[in-house]
Image (cartoon, rainbow over all chains, first blue to last red):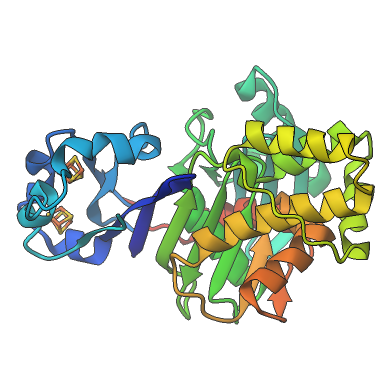
Length: 92
Length: 259
Ligand code: SF4
Ligand code: SF4
């Protein structure tokens, strides 16, 4: 499943998109350790696959949670570099 | 197998009881501070409606924002999976279901067997949900149904810029102060919610047939504004839009494999 977690407000749209079919096949789940804010949480989804989701308590603050990782022009984000299967996208 | 699906929403609790794929009972009740008690009561009303004994229910699945409250559940299912399964059951041709509830809206894409392939949840957007329409109707002192229908008789285009329900409310208050006709205010409110929900929905690539369910599906002002916003004509609205997720949960309770 392509799962979009996030929200929009007056300043823009803040969504992290996870292709959970890739997570189900991903052994290392390196995103979990790579994210300094602990945004990625391992879960078993409703279809019995081991995937990750965004911590529900933090979804509403994505813009601020990711702020330290996102000064302009800084190359790949820790989560994106760690995710070798290429399951992650940020909308902003 | 007899199963029950319980959807513990932010406003109402909905229960569907199935015997196989046939709905034999259902009930809805407004939630309270004591959610566990309200769930018990709603479940018991549905059991009564089904004319069965409670012990006849073999599997229970819960979904919705309060899905973890009910300790007797055999399965706890996310809103996205339950909503997707439920709307697919209502019409197998549906590929995109849009659930617009009291506090949250969701876009759910399903494949040809009803499995969710794509989803987006709009968090934190009180101004894009059912409770916002209700509070705006209250501000005007009109009941919900009349307020929703008023929008249909207006051609006005009044943009509402506020991104947050609190500010949107103050925009409405100033429209009232300027003696803006009620029908135009109603249209502005519905247009603004529709545009918010549409932009969330566009995160998933829309694929027909498109369905709306959840509380706002009953609101013709919203449905009309939403159709215009997405430029689509054909939108499927199930007979009982509020029970779709409970139905999905009840079906999934039967379909889950043991172990
Ligand atoms: S590293 Fe990528 S593929 Fe692996 S679990 Fe994390 S997001 Fe999914
Ligand atoms: S940008 Fe940083 S904080 Fe945000 S998800 Fe990626 S690693 Fe975590």
